[in-house]
Amino acid sequence: MARHDSRMRTVLNLLVLATAVAIGETHPARAADDFADVRREIAARHDEALKRLQDWIALPSIAAESLNSAEGAERMAQLAREAGFQKVTTVPTDGKPGVFATLDAGAKKTVGLYFMYDVKQFDPAEWTSPPLEARLVDKPGFGKVIVGRGAVNQKGPEAAFLAALHAIRGAKRKLPVNLVLVAEGEEEIGSPHIGQIVHRPEVDEALRRCVGVFMPSASQDPDGIVTVSLGAKGVVELELVSSGEKWGRGPSKDIHSSLKAMVDSPAWHLITALGTLVSADGNTITIDNYPKPRALSDEERAMIAEASRRRSEERTKKQLSVQHWIDDLPWAQANERLESQLTVNIEGLVGGYTGPGGKTILPHRAAAKLDLRLVPDMRKDDAVAALKAHLASHGFGDLEVNVTGGYDPTSTAASARLIQAQVAVLKRAGIDPVLWPRNAGSYPGYVFTGEPLKLASGHFGLGHGSGAHAPDEYYVIESANPSVQGFDGAAMSFVQYLYELAK
Image 1 (cartoon, rainbow, N blue to C red):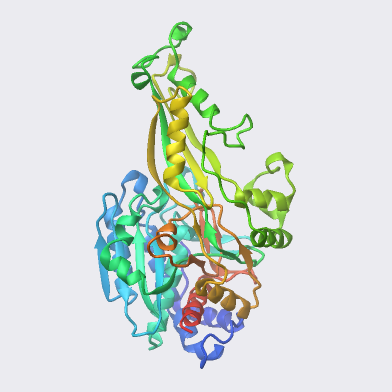
Image 2: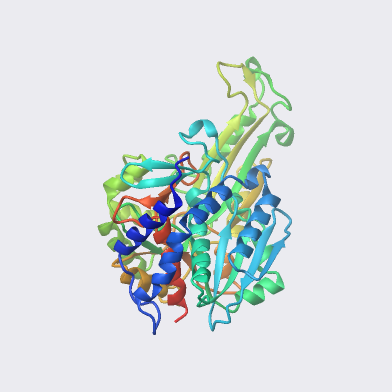
């Protein structure tokens, strides 16, 4: 792992910060250069902040594997205490524990934070750098990046936010806002128990004082474009299981494949059922009485058109390793589809023997893992109910429908203070952000934007990373790209955002 002399690191960071784009005035009585003390603290504390992130990546909490969930919650609680939160509680749920913390700065305004401490599964054999060693690696076109599971999703941006809190305190400043932190360890399995954290009376009471809730993120594309999303799609994660035992046909254990001539196949039964959920090309949902999404508004269409004009279709295709959009749609229409359409996606399909060579069996069980993406005004429970009713009416009522997680979509108005503060900070940095109706991915913001809280919710943070859920996930630490901030610049963006929210 690359290491640098602390003194040289401090000098380098000061030079980088001195030449960084000034973000401008962030408080009615405070000019941008009044943050020189905080910038110095961020630079001086770079090494300790980086080590904090590396140590965090070295402790993977994987909800799907029940790995280090208690340890992950305790580490999250420790990080909060070290960053200045006075009251920190580990919250038990019917699943993995969460963390609730408050920081009372005696400020007039309070801001909510949403963190996740869990990460996705990984196979070290697929990585070019060990996923838990959090090595610094030279990445052409980006500079030095940290490579590891959770580097950008979401530990890197969260660690940059914590670095901002350490720097503000190190500069002998009072935080300009009070903070309420909600952290969970099940985001990567669909947040099935986040409501048990958020709706606890003491958590609910604290959140009601907030102007909104945001999650630290790395929002800069390599060309410097920053997207401000006004929501996210909802999601349902589930497994469909076909078995001879439940079906009453086919074998109740694996048998020789020659017997297919007279014995039904649970695997084909599952595949046939899957075929009833979508059109032949897999792109149109055909579930009976499935909830209907609302149409895009004129405002949303205008946002998408402007974003399509500014974003590169060629670069996006290259990043995604695709050559065509559905139906070969033009770029703008493909983006409209991305924003407006619900989906039924097969994450994985497993049955019988999948090892090397052949093994002539008729398997007694087959399973498909699905995710269903939801858009306003759909509801998770309505989607699940329609799916179950559809399967039953089409002769597949024997299939097990095991819902493992999910939640409703989320929306926040562009006029919300939480969003307008983001736009103000970005414009002062010389960045004209792209407004985007909603992320095509999902996060459980519905617990904040829905009943009973009805808070604004979103994501914010400069910096760049990529590879979430994939091998070689990375987050930029020392940027060689003038359009992208590194770790210290990301931390400074959070400082600016908190002072803007304090207005």
